[in-house]
Length: 271
Image (cartoon, rainbow, N blue to C red; front, side, top):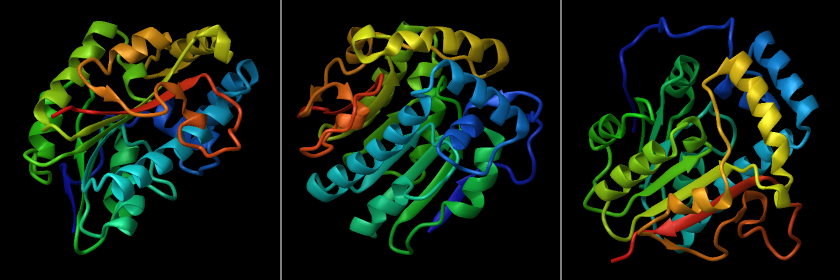
């Protein structure tokens, strides 16, 4: 079953004159759901910070490994994917429902192009649920209220926050959002997180000028953070092995790929 708890029709929020993260990210991973303005800004950022394409691919691959781990090894059957982005191949519901057809997935985003694609592409198994809600990460109460129509918050949920908290510029606000969402899910639930860093040991200092250009020419505004600030989002949770590591290297096997300046982690809410 697939649903969309959103109004039909177009959205006045769609602005194709300004580059938008969901579309630029789609461009970086080789997708076609973007406009000339997205390509222009994406190319300029990639010129300033060439590793950005590696980050985009590594983030996507991390998602696949994390969902396979949670659905396959940890028996998770509910996923709340906040900051969905544009659908491509191997989305959360496809991976989870391949392992567990009864899995229930709720996607959350507030970009109208993501919404349009969600209605047509995010179709899941008949045994499970694939739902989409139109909501902003800055409003966790709205996310939880709408997601509760498809998810059972008395049972464990994997909360996916891949590359989304970097759009919450105030770190205290970002911590509040994570805390509010994780407060609403039961013990045994998981937080799956990726976040860009400016830490120099990972080559992240190049994020700073690239993000300055982004914030002057695209939307929404973005920020990078230190390892310590990103780790603080997991307060009260138990970080699973291998800990807070470059997302390219999280459970990537013995032949570790190169590190990218984007951390990835999975943590569990303790009993």
